[in-house]
Length: 288
Image (cartoon, rainbow, N blue to C red):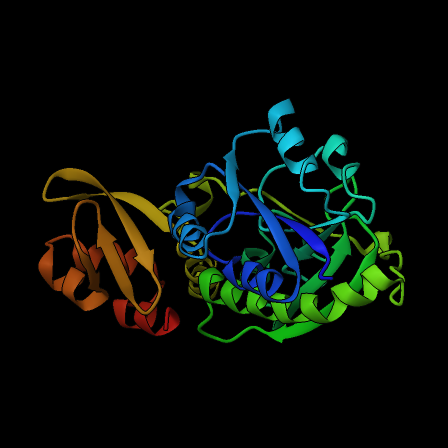
């Protein structure tokens, strides 16, 4: 008989984990959050006829729904909501967390973005047993992953959670049977990341980051919150986004290449030139 499992997760990257749980275990229930990033996930769950609930918080009704499935273990990934002790206590074998970094490095909400921002050549996926502290729990397994030169947080997270799903299928049966014993993390080496806000990507056009840092910011903050600034175009202040692959988007307009922006707006070349101490050409090279 396959082990009953409940899954906690949200956003655009967790479908491979749900697929693995649905294939290799008895996935009874998915708990997700009410977020604007969940459209594709909800559609996936409905197409697969997987029972789910979207929540803002863990109220008594939600706890009772989770309990009724009688699962001894749960899995969590990219959930974005604190799991209280009242939920942890439901599962005798605990909640297993898939975290997209090589813990204890980059605990917290934005580990992929932090790895790209810092220019790390590698990152990875950790599978831990969730406890009441942030990404602090006992370690079950890790796998390393190279960060490609053109990776955005989107492409990196997709790859990491796909690898995490494969690793989970290998690790979870051994943990459930008692063959795999979790070990303590080295908490003295822990580093932490911050929850991103819209303002995380805001830059000052009068004192912009230098091209190497700016290039990493553009990749790390795509698709959200993106790197952006305010500037006047044709006499009106607009929000302007800098995007990967030398692309730019003016508020209310379609995405365009840097050259088209420079040629299409009287202020275009001047704005781009402020982003580099040399020239628009060096900016374009730095952002490739």
